[in-house]
Length: 480
Image 1 (cartoon, rainbow, N blue to C red):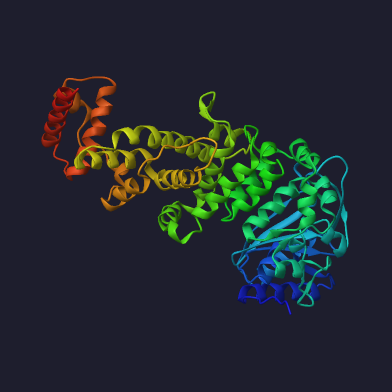
Image 2: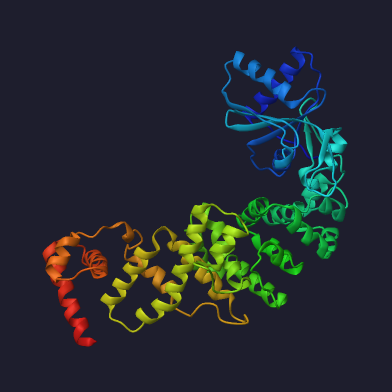
């Protein structure tokens, strides 16, 4: 039998809720709704608790409950009320607080009616009405705090969790017509939880009009938020494959150009295999070196490499343009994508010329230069390069040049050059100018070369570094 096991502070919270409800004779039925219930049933920890209340508004209940907690000197803070805002899809007033690390929202049960917009007319509703307005059966479960029982008004939420399937409470075409953002939410949960997608959802997505409605009535900001969450999922390929198969890529990414869907599907499948196959340990090692907050950029960029029209849009890469215009990503995320774009070109074009066929010392200088250029994005760049390189075989055209990616990566790590970008030039630019009798951009170029030589020889001695650089310049001049 499905049951929920409460941890210490969850149990204390629910006991406090019942105590306050009883002492004040409110006689409300208190239910936890949605994601917390799903995650607890699946055995995961959950810190976001949405409490749906009948008989009284969520804000009224929360105001009194806050006083109750403070009278008991409980650790509660961050209380605020999000007002009703029809234009921003804030359908009912919501009261929020933080209790011992748990983020708690209080809201009334509600029903929704849609016209030709994804923002519904909202009314106070019953538990059944609140259930069937939700996006997926697995997100439509209630935990009745009064009775300590799970309530499954769709009759499918618990069985869908056991069967690991994503399904809508209502008929998919109807619920997607009401709010087409639910299409991306269904794909996102399939990717996040590694669930299969119910056949009736696949059937609904065959209807192209739903995709066009997604583009017409859902803001780019909301689409971007869902896409980001999709690519934060390890199984993002599940969602991407569905988006390609049902021509949603061209809806979400305006520069997408997929003439041969089956070929691109094989390409995306190959990327997923790279992160799963036992023999791809090195690819996984590099991928796991990417900071967690940047892994969605690696996944997104790897997919964009094979689905977007190439080239630049004005002064930025197609990837950075997409992040800004289609997905409304943050300035920091757009900056990372633009830098990664440039670094991939650098690896693909420059290193294939500079790295091969040179002496050991020159190779090490090359490795230092790569590490200094890529900085914190090094793992991301190498991870994308490997993902694309290993999956582009059989693609319509070669996207990246064949270069010894793993050898270069290992060389940087094994020689301790990963943090080489943090080193500053040990020689003042004015001394470089005076000693070498140069000016302009040459000063910056020589300062970088001095820094690389200093890292290579583990020295900061100004005289020896300047002498070494002068000798290298004379040698390069003779060779030229």
